Image (cartoon, rainbow, N blue to C red; front, side):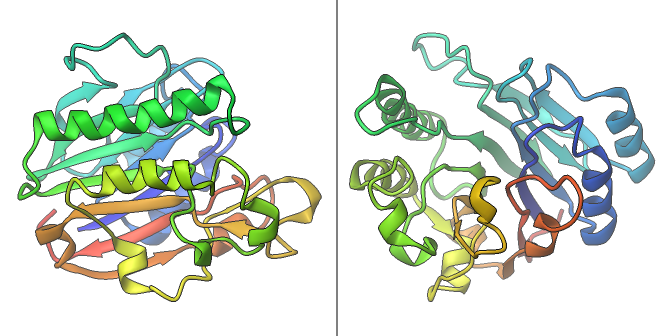
Length: 261
């Protein structure tokens, strides 16, 4: 089973690039973030039908929006924190579905704005709520994938220019501790597991020539529960997708599992 997570930063703008990624990598499951649309545009839906993919979508106009694309039709789709008893979150940041015997989550963690701001408080609370949801709904022995833009670089080695980013909401200890708390549910960071040395990034700011200057962060992650992670044969980042005309600021992250799709 091949899984991709990718923050497309506007599904409308990235239509052709998405089709290219699907054709080139032939994934079984794709987790998308930042659709910036209430639903998949018609041309994107047409591409998915042509290429043999189903879609579960939790969209939002202009902002946020997440989706799960899969060759097997997704079932038992849950949008956001539906059913957890908490306040309704107006941000479309989380969707899950059963795909081929695996519970798949596509997540777009809050950025957090500035450290100490209301947005940062929301970010920390959102991560805490996600962990509580996992605890309430699942056992760590289940085959679960949590993939997405976590907006946190877990390790110093995931940051090309640490002196620049150390005090931001991507890297401060509170953010890393929040992500670690989610991970401690029983999840394995598949890329870090395969490449613990780090130095490979998934996001480069559009500004200040960050990509050609190598100013990247690894903030896009495919987590898997322990037993499922043991079947992971490869994990990589398609850095080339960040090149060329109208790229997303994120590159697709890929993981291959020896689990039937």
